[in-house]
Image 1: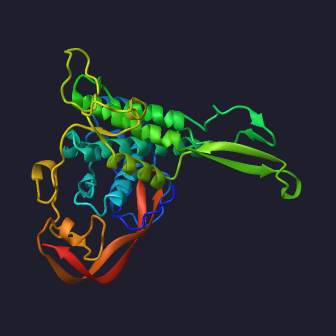
Image 2: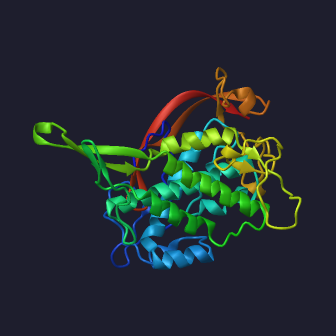
Image 3: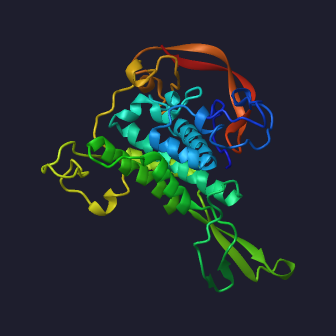
Length: 355
């Protein structure tokens, strides 16, 4: 997967410590060198992955390599979340925890608009990562997508397509678990997870390879691939901006249904919308209970018309002008399975910092 992030992020501290042969460990927390493919079995994945729930542990013991790919997909999602929210008061930074599972973040227990986005982007990340891993031949449980059949004038389906169908299926098993939609939060989570996997499926791409004498391209073999993950993030961010507020109570005492607060609503679009039921906090100040860090210390711009404008990002508080040398992870790339290799770049700049 290509990294197209404009800003460098901290190294992925993957939620598994993968062991190599014998008792030697991969030091993924200080990964600056290329490693061989890690051994993925229940001992190296499941026992070293924090915060797996009962359902996820069952899946991990049965398919440890697929779960490892799912965990890497969660890291794709966290990094994309940071990219999409980099100018906003809440910037996803609390989702990336050392040796931690982002799904355990307390903000994901609430009904905020941001919660809706995170559930969707994580579901999309898991789907995309597994889909690609299948086509790379890295997983024992799946292979390339062979569901596309038929041919047309000068082309035919074939090649080694990303197995998005399997990726979406496993993401549902891994993330939904035993959720049954018996309460509004559970229903919201299931809905937004579905939106995330659907966004990967809907935006899949067709790639083709030419065959023929002297590059004539008389026949093309075509296959489906998962979209670039930045495109997935962009589509979900659009859905975030137009997310739908839903009712927390239903008229009947039967099965919980998602109902928009607005009575007049085009139902044809509702299934693909992100949904939320709780007003978000302003994210201006620290809230330890939700792991909200506030905006103190954030870098802002006096000239920007975006959400990183100093007046808006600093929540009306003053800001200081500082000359700072900032060390950043740069030139990062994801390595199969479960770590990121980065260089360190240092930049010296004059910056505006919220007090």
